Length: 230
Image 1: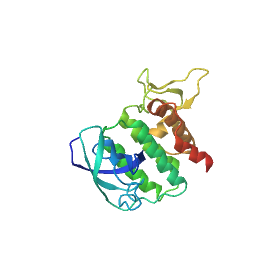
Image 2 (image 1 turned 45 degrees about the horizontal axis):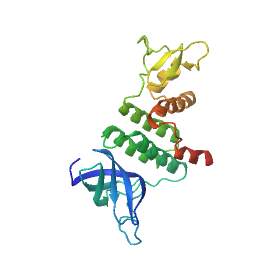
Image 3 (image 1 turned 90 degrees about the vertical axis):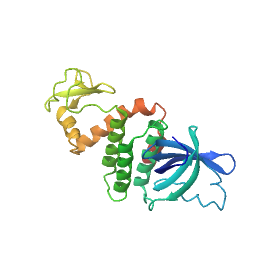
Image 4 (image 1 turned 135 degrees about the vertical axis):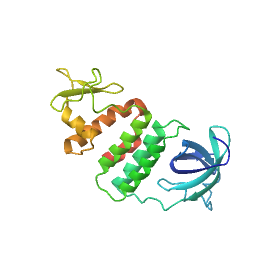
């Protein structure tokens, strides 16, 4: 990325750097995840402190040719999304997924658009699990690890709503054997059509856990602990 590039984005993570600065991970529409030093933000009178927060739409300018940039300019693009309670935990979860799953500098514009859409939904909807599944599906699709919900992986035959299937990450849905965890074909097709029944919601959560594991690794996500405490 060239110097002095203006970007639209959000802070998804930050950590202290030296005495008065932080290193912030920004999730941007055109450049994906970008890390930058934000100088002096930890000073008591810093005018940037209120902006280096999650869920705040930003216009920012970075400079530098190395992977670690320096923040040159930052301003609020719009008002921050006001997330509270479980919706706030969902926002933390999405940010942690982005931090763990998106390589630095990989542009994922469709995921960025879905991220903004999900933040908006979290301010007004109560079906938080559906919002998270839509975000996870978008992320997995963009990373190229989303299975085909319409065909059996080995044969290419259409998913039969009356048959049972097994699921293997990076392979997809295959006809179930006797001892495997079985998934009803009708529920698989329901997910493909985003028909969010109680059964499909449970299945979607389980599937996303399986698909995300190779992407984010074995280390537990800190944000999931917040849901267990609430």
